[in-house]
Length: 310
Image (tube, rainbow, N blue to C red; front, side, top):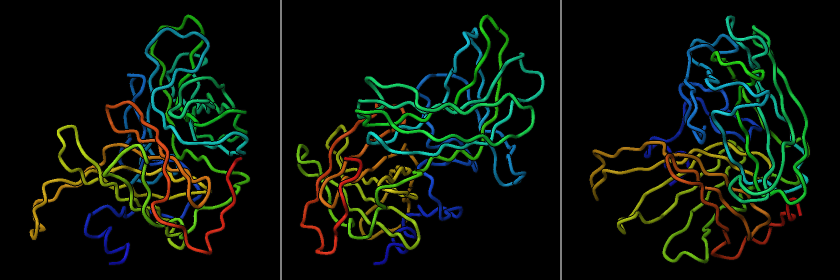
């Protein structure tokens, strides 16, 4: 069975899938905010106002409803597995609607972390921001810090110190990509991968560079020892695939009726070489989890990817 046929059966293939070098999930907020975690319990909503004027797309509206302290207050984020010394380009189109407190700014903030799930030591490596009332595209280059293992991409609002009135900002078309990738994911990485510490579960991975699609079927177990059918699909760039995570349920053997597939978070896969990788799982409403991946079977003879970021 071909990969497109699998996508068709599961209902996972997005009609908006396009070839891209973007590491982020749902960067253009086409219909919702899925893929962007609410780690901070701060106001953010989807609005039908697209930066490019596309009536079929939208943007995210963030609100800083606390007292300003001359800092960036983040409301939604994504966490990616990322090595040290990686050269990146970040870009976004943003605006601050009329009527906001003076000095309100829309911003995207990149933070390097030494922990696997965007925790531990590290520091800010890039901030792009604007206080323009009309849509403005802003970009910057950045390099991850020594010791980096993950990267936090945070959508934020800035208010001046002492300002108590709410301040809102709109952000759309967020881009994060390698400006100098060490290598790109290749079809030779397709196969069975697992975490040696976990028995009886793992991933079947399919990398399709010709259509820029990364797919993973995750066979796993739930809290009550029930079998879980989880899948991940999306675009990829360089050695990283940051993709949506789906859960499928309701099926019965020999019966195609009643199956439901819903997004439940994101998964960020990174591969160091042909036999070693890692993944950050960000399920909605649950803490991030990171764990190593190793290939279950020997790689193909032509799989000669260099070690990435080492």
